[in-house]
Image (cartoon, rainbow, N blue to C red; front, side, top):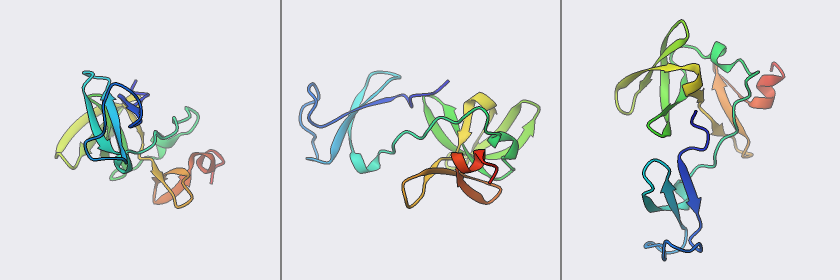
Length: 137
């Protein structure tokens, strides 16, 4: 699960939320988990990355110490692969110093955007787009 990110975003011009407290440049977000809302700076939001294609063997290439994202408590969190045990992955949320046991369905690549705005991820010290990984590059 986890597609959709757990947050809905509206613009400062959409009804119901009033005017942004910090002026323009803010958007109203609503959390799917509890329906709460808050105003945030648009610059602090990241567009939703593309879904990972099932034919991309990114998990088989993911090496110990590399970054991934874990779906946990309604959101995606940056983690570091610590170990594999069968179909389970032991990952570390370094920011919180917390170890999690995850399934493949709970993990996705650590998506970043390159200078041109294309989504890419790094495996084995090589950064490529999904299309480049698909092509075997």
